[in-house]
Image: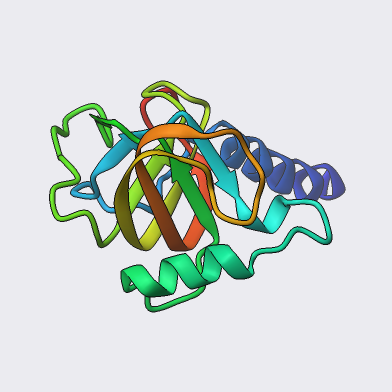
Length: 148
């Protein structure tokens, strides 16, 4: 009987952790943007020339190496169910999603952006996109709190 108790308690704990709502690392006041493309630079194919991306981000004033790029980020969206934050300063912490109710998001502790008109992401070879391009650093992928 004691063996059953020792096995059941850890299993119950594991089950409760998997059913717990997803927590966001992003603070509630972090602005969020809907982007046509959100590109995780760590997930690009080997051999991709990222030097141009790094140079562009540095020229815009990003202190660290960018880890995510958002392209055509033309619309502010809710961070969570209660927020109405806007990305006004075009720098600082930001959340990037492909849409408001996308399954995942990228939370970046720092970012800089440029209104590129119609431009392509330097060094990556993706098609041109209109609008705001965001270079984010210190980014982590996490579940979108609006759907969990």
